[in-house]
Length: 278
Image (cartoon, one colour):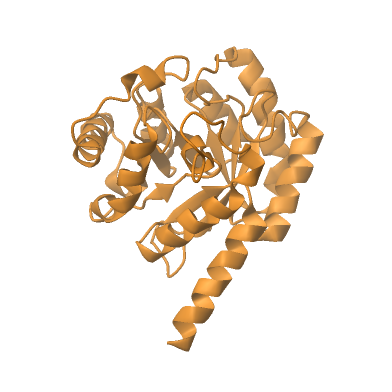
């Protein structure tokens, strides 16, 4: 694997490959494995340095697929994209899926539950030694928003992530494997997401690489909308996503997870040009 876990002058761009029929952002557009592989190849051509392949929708209210169905969705796409040479991340909460994806050519485990959903995930990460993305999580999608209750969201997210890391270290995961994700949109209301962004420095200060995944999230879709109005559709949230990605780039993020790779790379090119001119 060629990807570095050191934060560079601009974040790495992780392109999203959803192999689900019920994704909040693309509605199953890439559900067919051949379509998902072609989409991944397109994202690489647009500048993605990592592809994040997932077969379970984690939108609020989503029901989980069976283990067999998740494997059917994910593994062929990983295998099909492995020859591109791009770094591949498997977005799963199941150790069996992560293991199968690693065998098919994946390089990173992206576990939105940080090991809470499957007790075997930590030992798998420890045994394989691959980079492991641990996200702040309070429960499955079906009811996670009922847990969006915080006194100080920044302090609580950091404390809960640190508690998860202690558990992971106890089963053999090494510090140098870990990437943190504050979990924007997961058991978070809009005000929680904005505050976590405003205090991104606090998480970066832990010394771990930090992944920022705000792409097309609902809190961005509510910007400029009257109270009670429907948010703008997910596909119309890319400009707002690019703004959060630029903010992440200026505050030490290791990578940004996005649907619009071309737009994100263009935004980072602008930032590079401004910095070079200084």
